Amino acid sequence: MRSLILRIVLILSFFCFACPVPAEDSPAAGISADSSVVSTEDASSASGDKTVMADKPDKEDSVYDELKREIQTIRKSLRGSERKKVLVAYFSRTGENPGVGNISVGNTFIVAKEIARQTRGTLFEIRADYEYPADYDQCLKVAKKEKAAKARPKLAETIDIAPYDEIYLGSPVWLEDMPMPVYTFLESQDFSGKIIRPFNTHEGSGEAMFEDKIAAAAKNAKVKPMFSVRGAVTQYESTKLPSAIKTWRTKEAIKRSQEIIDSIN
Image (cartoon, rainbow, N blue to C red):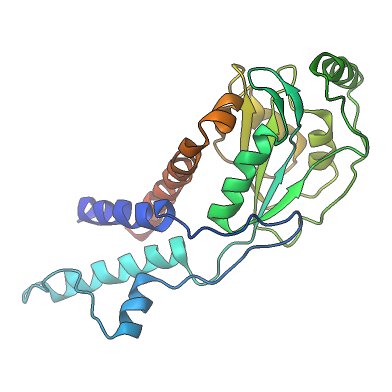
């Protein structure tokens, strides 16, 4: 019975989180792109069609009904009418970048924009109240000084995270660490009860222990496994991003589905 439920849950998880989201205009910073979602079950009812899950065994009515209730519970959890409010906060830099040359659109912004499209989240740019040099070597000098001093630069804009349930947090890797303005953002907010889903861009540094650093800076937040991608992929192979991000998010959905099954049995 558990194995049957799990197989169905995996299918539901994939379709709930991996199916393409209709293309939308990129949400502007601080503007939510939330919209209502109609389940396939609702759509079928509206059109007059009836979806048949399986032939109902005459001698196993109670088992069938139990399975149906459990599937409905899982579906409601994964794609319930109360969609979580999502914030996609990111730090990104244009100008000269290693591995990609001079860019007019930041690597991390490209990832953040796709995540916001898939989650219908609100985009927010984390940025200091001054500009970093466009020249890479000059920017590196500034970054080294800030890291050595453990600086917490003043941000150009702030946002209240209280209304948001989940925060996707994006950052490039600078000197095996996050840029100091990201720490300003993390340390100036109350993340109690919040879920943080980190992502980063790099040119060989990988995850750079971002999960641990974010957990240490954002007290009482629940930090989930991160998504990490090379900046060159975001610039020159961006068509790979939607499916890669969906896969990352679907893995989390499958994990949650298993937790629901465990709580039922």
